[in-house]
Amino acid sequence: MKIKHSNLLLLAAATIVVNSSAYAATAVKSNVAGTTELTSTAPSPSNAWTGGAGTNGSPASGDIVSWNNTSLVGNQTISSAVTWDKMTFSGLTGALSIGGTGTITLNATGGNSNALDNNGAGQAVTISNNIILGYGKGSATTLGETGNRVQLGISTANTNLILTGNVTSNGTAFVSDANVWLRGLSTGNRIDGTLTVDGQLGKADVGTWTLNGINTIGRVFVNNGTLLAGSDQAFGAGTIYLSDNGQAQNPVIASKDSTARTYANSLDLTVGTISNTLAFTGSTTASFGQTSGGTGTQTFSTDVNLGTSVRRITTHSATTF
Image 1 (cartoon, rainbow, N blue to C red):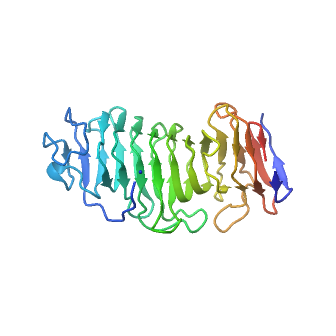
Image 2: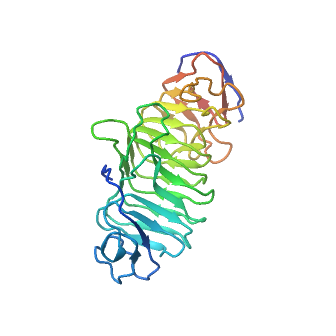
Image 3: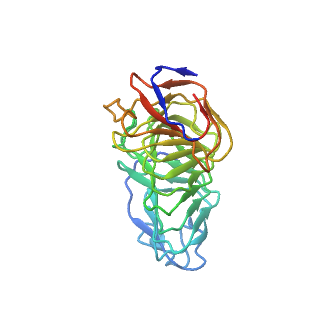
């Protein structure tokens, strides 16, 4: 291990394409039985969708696509490529599972846009299609940038978003500045496929996200909640920045289970806010491992930057820096 400062206080405890066009309308899925194929250009019966700019109210390119408490749930299919602005889920009456071979492109126009927003009243949403996250506007050229971001957001504590396909976000053309944030309060959110983010992957809110793939990520910025690793390459190979965001926030990095993990990522614990380097010097703590669940040992094989301050670190499972 290479630690850049020796002041350490240990509190040990044991494929979607970029498109910036504005959305035209909101297409709401109806509760008509048998209308489980979501990509039909002439849906039959004609009331399979309402409100969209396409045929019979179906979603046109750039539309918001929505499921609510009147929508069909269960197994549904996207069998050919679609380009929508975002997908939203609220008040679902049962679990929703979307599959098929069609790639889903979500433009996510505008700053702080939830490309996938599941406020599903306790119902899980599972999507197995490959997803390409468009960029909207703004950039992650600044570390910890939150002003313009594409969000995978979950608004309730008991609702999970499960993505079993590949998720890709390549930012604006020719610039490695994608800014994707994992949001929400629930603990069962996960991405099982390959996650590719050519800029910044952020993690906010108190919920938990599990990354199971062998991923390519420019950098990881965690200011709240728990990020779990299902592989040694879950966080890519860039630097992991842990921040308390200048508030009473305590980010956690852990294996998703009892499996030992060795990461090639550097660690940086010096970012309190974008302009304040006093992270983890008061009551907040950067935590590694969990007392149950994510108990696997963790090894960080490269540099750890603590700056010139004493940082508070808690290890809930064996951790080597």
